[in-house]
Length: 512
Image 1 (cartoon, helix red, strand yellow):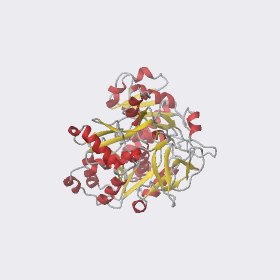
Image 2: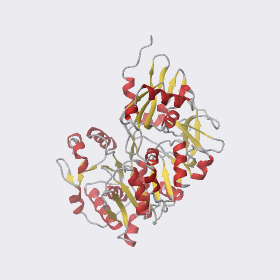
Image 3: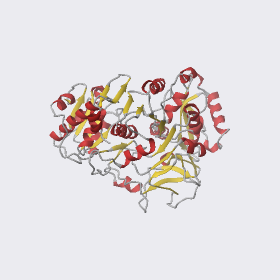
Image 4: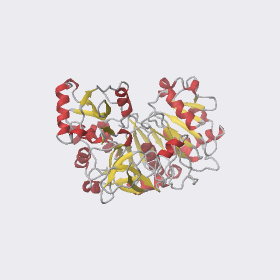
């Protein structure tokens, strides 16, 4: 359960393969570089419980930095490579990190960082040197390649994207384990998905997100090989499965949709003979999309539900999903509860707020008020999702509590209309949310990206609204649809709905 063991037994084995650049990192390189980086952190005075942050694109040196922090008991905070300098500086200051590492590719976006950060934060750059940053390669090159003394496990401190305000850090307690002792989450992932030294794991999403970060760390701890896409491309991702003999992969629903919309000839050329487990999470997957993936790839599509807060976890395999379509599974960590807004526990098939008990502690860094709001009087915790369980205990997600539309006193969950409209053949991408209505408080709005932008107009707007009303109650359907060139999505496919919604609320209508 540590890359150092694989480096000793098979030093030339590929730990990481970057695509399309083709850069390979062997286990020996990963072990030696992480040792050197750990010595760098120690030389700067960092001790167990201190923190470092990294802000990089998907890069071959990403995980040597994470393993270095892991090996000497540090918190490591991945920061989105899409953030601007002031946003990066906020996270660096809020988390209290002592070291920030960026790549040269990020410098154009982050040139003002040195002026935004105090001298107490050491700054390094990978692949170059710019004003205000020291060379990372030169710094670790001066350090020994042997392990540090007194090693102990560190942990990831991730920042939730949130729906309002600044992102909040989730800072777990350090496990206090030896660096090669299996921690709870990697152990559970190995149990669920069978990662081992023969695993070839395709990672198409940005590494700064919690799932790619932790899954890749698990694969490397198990001695497998991570094939990491530098940027997602649907056709390339499919080709890599056959080219590298991929056994495991991880996706988000948007990636499924993009692959399903490739030409039939491209999809037919896909060789998935080695592909045993395709995992997806991060956002609700429309039932029709999931069913189409199972028909195409066979019974290898697995799903789980969790969050950066790690308060609990549900999981479901393909056979169970076919018996419970739309479910994200039963609890495999923590106890699942569905509560009404007044805190009462709801029976099966009634929607409420999803809570977990005994799944793990939750504390938002520097935000006691948000921490308190996330808990009930029993100490159960929620990340704000709405859902229900069926009689067999399978969870079905409805939406985020923050996205619920209240129209005339009726709660509407926009995910239903969003999932339905995404299946229309003329729609490439879509978002549904609430906008002001002077009479009812809110009304349902959709914003769509079309496969053929030339088709935008009143006739297609009516066609899509009618399509929605054929399948859902009219109150759940948009009253109007705007057409745009692109939706604000993160590279993982996660929709930044706040950026779409906010402009509509800047000048709410007046009732007449």
